[in-house]
Length: 224
Picture 1 (cartoon, helix red, strand yellow):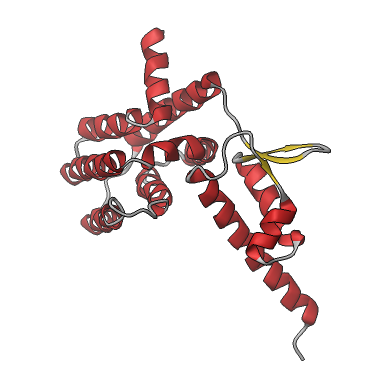
Picture 2 (cartoon, rainbow, N blue to C red):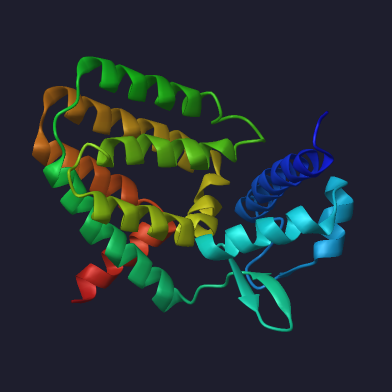
């Protein structure tokens, strides 16, 4: 006989995953703004689920840094100061460059898979529902950085990207930025195929500096 408790747990887990995805999309698309409070009752009613998976989802997103939990107040979309964004951008600049300098050269099949991934992004350039480009961009870069032996550095880059996601996504709201991202990825792919370390580091740096967070990091470098 099926265990009803197990069924309920599976349902709650699916509900939490769905809530995480929905809330992340709303933040990335600017429907939930930095500093705005997340009301559990409204989210549960909107998604047609109980508050249990909603609470779990909020906890997950708080651990990622997308939300902030304030005791006795609730959850809020994380708000970053310009100085905090500059620090995140600076750390990404330093760590991503080091990962790029230490990758092992990939196979032709690996590069072909990355090119297919970039083609998936290209198909979203003219779409109104473009938010998947953010996660596809993550996958594109993290697969490249994953070729480096510096796994602890890679883990830190993943964490920093989650902190910066809502602000990076602001740029993706414009078609020009989405189109430019695909073109910049093509240059990175050519550098990988040519096994040119200098071109790879340059391509990743130019791509990063074209985002709002990356621009803050570049500005911070120029001031020092």
